[in-house]
Length: 343
Length: 239
Ligand code: HEM
Image (cartoon, rainbow over all chains, first blue to last red):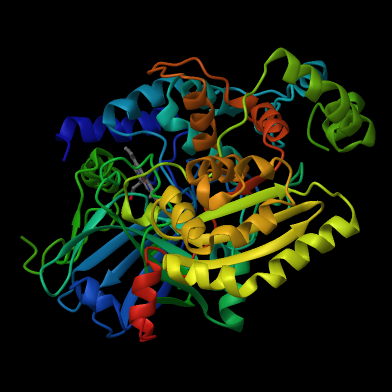
């Protein structure tokens, strides 16, 4: 865990890089929607992990889907990382959180990198690249810088690329962000929790694992257009859930001796053992004041974990413990029990 | 229309889709850049790894150009496989670590695609030791095959010959592909480096010029991490 001043600084640098203050809202993943659901573990889940939500009994779940960008403007059609934060509600009133995004890996390894990245990848004026320069790019068989979306006058793209060009560990994450696109639905994307966690089995065996959500409806992005639709994801999900519940499979990959446990910039190879841990069914979208609670005031923390799941030593995961609490306090988010006795 | 977009902007944005640009890219720019910034072919087969998961269900994509590039040559290849099917299957059974293997004719190549556990050299060594001269009939139809016939007497040369014809396995992530190129060029740069990520398309194009046939990604596995022996045991096949 990082000390409280570092946790504050982590959140502050995010606020400092916003296009405009967001008030009492999240400084990243600002735009989001709360959804209710149920999770049912698979037959085999309990043999890998003793956490209560893997025992096979259906568990109530709160989910918040979000657009990754920080800021009050909603740009559903922009190419952007999407978030899926999930809380499994446990019997004693506590919860176990799992926060994931559509990016398969992160772009910095630790807090120091994060500060350096934030320093380099600042918002800069973002203008259309001149067509002559684009022709020069094509002649060099290079990818020209993307065009700004209508109304997009600033971006961090150039700074992020500068950072990636200097730091190979960040190249995959930053390259993938550039290609990520916009999903056709929040229910049609895969979401990765990127960090390693340790799960304990009933026989006491501890295994390093990584989790991801796989949409049963399949992965689908919209076709990119120069003037993308600003708002469609909330309505799409509402309509979808009125017709039929949407489902996700929770997949757990088991790491092997030699796999990177504490570096979330490095995905594990696809050749690792993969266990289907259960199915999440999205059932309804709360309305009105209930939506404000489910979509805004709710606060997740990647280190809030049921007994049976522990965080790894990934420095980013450890830093998030404090940073998310700082951010929650700053925006007046709902505190949530860490322990049954609330101590 | 997005602000300040002019006619030339729109034209240039669509340029890569035009037949003219595609022609220029393929016929002029690619050879030009290949000459200016030469790229070495990347070696075939799985990436070396000590880890269990990377050493089960490995892929071999063997592409063997036929000497006789005609329907007659292809028919000979088809015959060689079908005549020796029993020997080949028995050999694969005896190797004991092969999940799947099949022969395919693509263009004027006879290809062997297989999924196996363990070390590549052991697989080929066991395979050739157990089927021996029968495979000579296939190798004899292939360009450069005469150098390694009889295969069971030239085992090490045969292993090298197969390795050279096994496709480069493009990694699952574009950046691991860059790392492969860097390794091949002996680039051990440490941070901060001075890369240019926007060059990735050119690097990929030139690599695909050097390795015209490649296998894309590590592939899908329904039950990753399990060896042939484990699958047979779980299924109770009495093996
Ligand atoms: C040092 C690294 C990171 C910092 C400083 C950071 C910071 C933050 C902050 C301050 C929030 C708002 C929290 C709140 O107010 O409730 C947030 C939300 C979020 N972050 Fe991170 N984050 C980091 C890494 C990551 C990583 C690696 C992921 C990938 C899984 C991630 C995914 C998310 C998601 C999905 C949300 C929205 C959660 C929600 O809907 O409530 N973050 N992050």
